[in-house]
Length: 435
Image 1: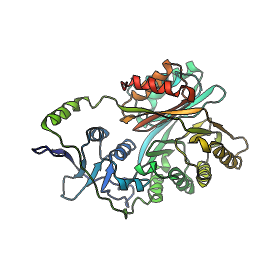
Image 2: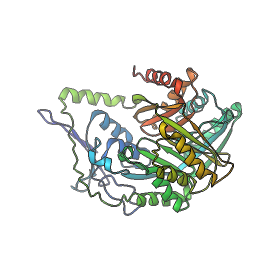
Image 3: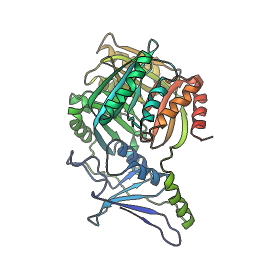
Image 4: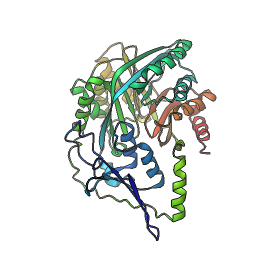
């Protein structure tokens, strides 16, 4: 149940959501008993947590609140105790790298391997799935080699069979092959503070490596890191990362919540209510480019616990900030890519190569300064099944090859040749009606 408060004369609007729980917790307390109820969480953090397994709030309600600046209070129907506020990002939230963790237990990983590394292939695959209403979650594509690439992604385990039936004929036409694993879980950490802190991924990977938990896939967003692990390791992985980031400990700093929103007139309230009917529209707010980064690629890393952790520990120790991280399994080996500031690219390559050579003499490390990223930003990017397909289709039409893909609930990121990045951004703005 929900209750919106509106007064006359107009004052800021608030909405109270009454549920069977007393607020938003740092993770599911049924799995991790030391989980802590949060006083407040930002719209963006709640959107990401909802997308990665936190089931208290449906993402559509958060999208609506964020779009129209309506603070939400999630509280219990059975008591008068204070719940959790969902509000715009507060200053104190930036001091906390991670605010919550979540698990999706029943995922399936699909890898389409040896696809031609040419424009349009991603579009063909994801358009087919969008047409069947298959929700694709994590998407990880690393830079191709020898004219071929591998595209990995996850779908709900319940959709595995029909996804394979759909993709296997397409893969045969492309000369590709499809591998799958129906026994995996996704574990994620979320926090607005990731924008302001370094070493968050390294800390997560190190904690999992200590427990000998292998990472089958990695994707990162602006405020989220997700890893795919064996299903048998899923719950243990969630507990490990919750403990690593001390999420059960109450924050010592001031956590006062400023929930002021803009006063809303009756006419504005009526317009807002009318627009509820269009909440299924794709909510792309902007397309931005990122030009000042280079890419490190590691090809053929042995698939074993601790290898990613070793690389990112060394990179963090060198004082190098890592942005986008993509890992995908192909042919039983891991391909890992990550972006760093262009000024640190060569140093990152040397550091990475030194670690990799201690792991496997056959693993290759490459760097590329000629790439750039385009980020399609909004809300509901994962749950609206056609967004990725439209991104890939728009770029395929102008023959721009996608070299890397990374996704989250709030953005789809693609890496392309730098000399075509502005053309790519303009095309995507036009595709989503932003120009």
